[in-house]
Length: 267
Image 1 (cartoon, rainbow, N blue to C red):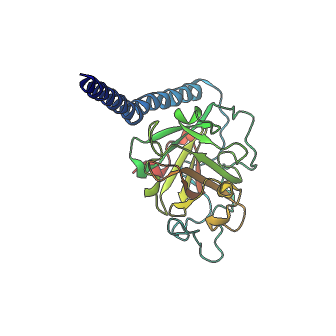
Image 2 (cartoon, rainbow, N blue to C red):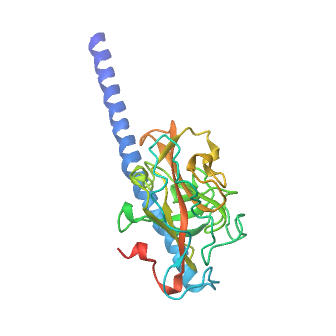
Image 3 (cartoon, helix red, strand yellow):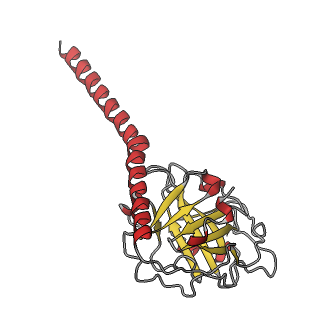
């Protein structure tokens, strides 16, 4: 009788643990994504409402076409994952000033901690892929969108505009970051200006402590002079966090928002 009780108790315990495990997996894989997608849509909605009703000061000038930045030799720095990319001799992508780009690196006063200020689009991730960019990289903040690293350049500014996002869970915003290739477009808007960056490197794998990847001129990026750069960071492997996956890009063009979407988003 005693043995039966022990076996039954153990069976019920295993069943309970198994049920809790399944529920936890469902929560991680599904429910966090549902909540994150809803939160991101809410942040984008807040921005669009703000842009529709608030005063705007265009960050760029134009004539109905994308204003050119530096020459877009986007295949020059095609390194392999885990190795620092090497650009062609003499290439300094993003080193010139595209019309409409900001002229200083420090984030402006309206980049309020925890608040959204831009929307990012990556055509390679799908036509409907759009994520809000919020100021800061705190754990709770990254459940609502992408996070802009404090003390890195402002959007379109000289230096390195660095952005972090989850690889998995909480909407999986950077799940496909490893699929980005040189020449791919990363487009952002702050409601006044469209900023089109061009990817220069294949994804670069490094350790979490390698903070140099968001320096104004990241050593492993292949860039050799100050410019207007973009850094995207996420965890690696896909379901782990032992390493970081990095993608670098340079500002290619800007376009006033009033003149419509840039070419990179028009197919």
